[in-house]
Length: 193
Image 1: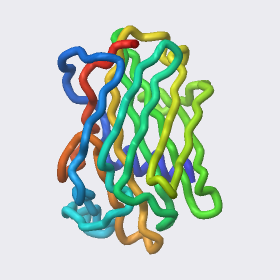
Image 2: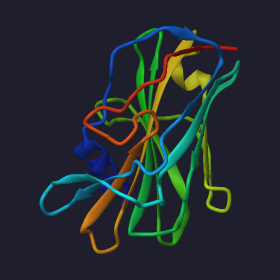
Image 3: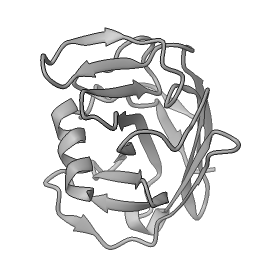
Image 4: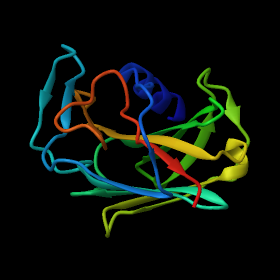
């Protein structure tokens, strides 16, 4: 199932956007409610959906002395569909790029997290995550050592889930209102606090 998650992320073509101004160690971004995009798996059409599940409403990035912590608040986060996943892209001041994939499915709703390089090769990292379906919250902790202890990071987040009959995939980018596109939007630079 992890390969399916990686394939779905790649199908979305999530990658980088240009660098922007520096910010402090804590950055919060609000995302529009009701901006989940539906991908029709047969036709490839993308339409704006009224689906609440997986709809990101707020994301907080914290860059501390020990870790980069990502907290994603959803309008609704349900154990629904065949599979759900989250994609986190981290870019550092030294040009290091890492992708974290959090994936969960029926029978394994607590999920699993894996870090990879852009070439999809795994990175050994002591990640921790928690998916709290009651609070509609995903928390991911990435040790700074896994990122070569950067001065600053830029972080992007997207979430998606696959309908049980494989007819549709629903996706939301935490920093784009009403669209997902082929690139995950990155935060401004978040300096270590």
